[in-house]
Length: 109
Image (cartoon, rainbow, N blue to C red; front, top):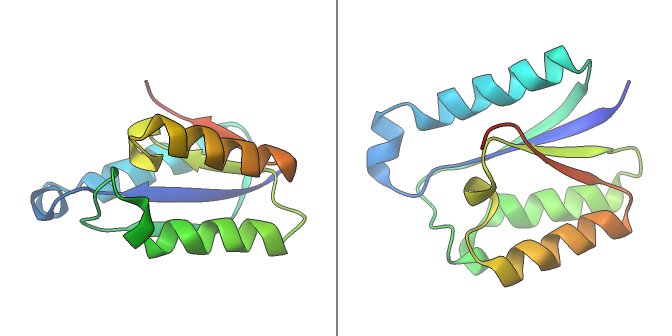
């Protein structure tokens, strides 16, 4: 069974009220269940802009966790813009994950 991590993020306080994190989590968990993936950890970032990656502690923690856990196979996100909105950051993070043999999966378009 592939081991996976889920990363969730909202950009604004308003999204906390509209249960965005809950919807993201449910979509990611449903994907994991359908694909028989084991979730080993969930990282959740609340009210953090996707354009500023330097202040996203949970994203930093996720990348560190991946570097220290050789058995992680996948990082699951609901939408790519929940992971990052900056294309340079996206390609950098994706390359970093790829270098460790970890795939990035987006469950919705």
